[in-house]
Length: 308
Image (tube, rainbow, N blue to C red):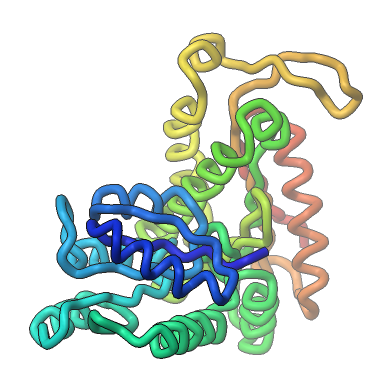
């Protein structure tokens, strides 16, 4: 799969020049002619890099950078600011806003391609992440769990999963499904930020599966907020007809049509508060068992392991 680059410039001739230059590297190119359109694309489609002109209509380049870099799901997206020749102030403002690099017009094609490759390498090195949410992926999750075990500190791990997500994806398609996953990530981030500790961790296992790592005294409030916020958001994922009905008609795993309730969220919470945990694999096994039990219940739930 080729890497996806968004070109943002209000001059179609400049966009054409950039597209011709990038064609050498077989990148998939998306285009926007103003800051408003750029933000819509950045927030809705997985991208690998943005080439952003500083002077664009509606929302200027500096504001676009600020908004992207203030979003926890997007802040790792590399942005190269394109400025006019000799406009030193624009370069400084762009870099201060959080741009990863800049290049001036007119540019040498080879230099632009080298800067893009460098920015992509740096992003891949800095973050082993899920491409959809930009949250840390499986390697980071395992490292974090191992670190907590080594410290022998008290921890609580919540395994988060969406209920009936496959049926939703089948009916509404992957683009809508991806947006549900991104919204879920935002809900988790806000709950952990509001109710958790500064060093709490959120990871994205893949698909609609997430992990939160916190401490036993914080985990209940985090789970309660996740469930409340998800229940508030869930109806907005549907069209008006399905929302009013409160369910969709979809095929189950046997291929039979049935009424599928609106999306809900299940969390299985395990901790070392009451039992000794010595290996990462134990955490995963216990968490999966608890999450499975939570999913067997109707609606959104969290189940805590209190066994000794």
